[in-house]
Image (cartoon, rainbow, N blue to C red; front, side):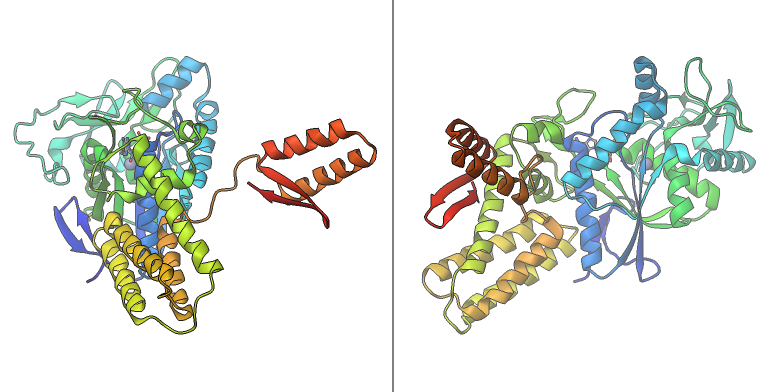
Length: 466
Ligand code: AMP
Ligand code: ZN
């Protein structure tokens, strides 16, 4: 069966292929860089990374645009409170996001774009919406008139029959499923960052940012638009209204929404204060691979309950995978091929692919890998795993890791290099020759602290990492 996704727009699982049969044009809403991202945000971005990798595994090329929202209500508020320009305020958080994404092995989208680099295009789009009669002005701000867009509600499947004409909202984020005219351009306020423009001095609303940046790079109809489930309404509903009002064409063919990471009964969120950042968890000694595994292991349309037990189980799962890889690489197996193991391998490879084709069912894909590992380990213990079975086992691990990417241990920050170890050992030898045993012991202790064990042998000093 072909690759298929659940499409929020049609509420159906549909077969997916890019419109041009070659390149997937995909837009994902990136972070608002007003603070460090938390692992809830990172669950959504991890899902998008798996999506990228699987689309490529299925033979499609990618043109993926992710934005950085570097101007919105929260940024303006926090920057003002910190007495900084929005650029000085957001710069370090944008950097921190890219660093966290790299630590979690999230591939860089083909294009990462900033809202503040596209203000003239936004002003132009708002002007065009005005010419087409979709906007009105009030106190220097420009609003989108939701009543003018007949299909409003088609993504969130809400019936806006009781809609109050002219009810307006000025905030970027509002979550009641209640049709309201939203701001495309917000009039300048004292002390706030603003841009001069033909539609007045002010700044763009959040929703217009994504419509403009996605269509600028990917054209009027995208193959995939993705984001966390909380963005369905109003953000994505508003993106559709703006974009389709501008072009008269469908804005995105597939809408993919990932469910929330939960802490107990609550959605992990900055505003509730119930969150962990990647840095928090790494500070507690958890590895990026374990965090990535945990975030990837639950299919994206299911809520994921975060727990430290879950994180430990993820670390254990990775250990099992790595131990199996070690066995494959280090043990010697009798010549020949064990048919039963080969048949299980083929089955697991098939099931792995089919599971990911099935709306990225990561849990089933992992089950397929572990079923094989269990069988293969048992076979190895009983001498029933042969040299010719190795290639297939390695292929399965490689296929797994091309998507999950957790097998290679991260190099710890501050990890000691081979060269540095050799230098310290040379220093210790010199200290001993000079009968400075205190210094020699200090060096041994320093190495031990940094995870290196020394063995004095007849052939000289040997070292290994703990
Ligand atoms: P924001 O920076 O608030 O725009 O959020 C960035 C992304 O993280 C959006 O796609 C949100 O839907 C997503 N997100 C926020 N909280 C969570 C959560 N607890 N679990 C999963 N995704 C989330
Ligand atoms: Zn967006």
